[in-house]
Length: 215
Picture (spheres, rainbow, N blue to C red):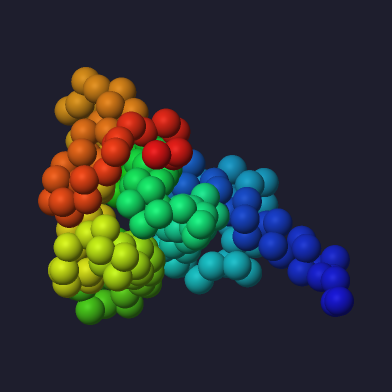
């Protein structure tokens, strides 16, 4: 097994520090507050030093957002066992997504209100890089729905469309909380969402009680 060199360790640490600093600035002050000078100062390196890792501000911001998207998907995937029923798996996926969006609400609120990362059109490079994470998540949801359909837990459906709409509903429920439009607790909002999804899928679960990702 090859171990990383000292240079690689330092590079990885520096890159991670730059991305974390960028995310922190975006979350608290928005995209306009991100400058190469500001991020370099937060990390403790010179402005020239930051260009060893990122070509410009746009690349730095995109990398920071792409990292959080990857982390969110990994957290969801790691908490869903294959041994439980498709309905229970779906509940856990939706619950975890709500939890994670709540935890990163400051950053996600900025992304919700400022859509400039998608300014290059849906076919542009920035949009494609970010949308691939959404597609991966919806493919995961679709695989759960496919299994439930085979087991006749869920009715016949076009699972790719259903996955798209379930993801959209979960994002919308989280956005309502991010914007301060919900007076309910995270658990109450998640339970209401799962009850609505159950109604749409005609899943007829014994319970939609949500307990911190354990439906």
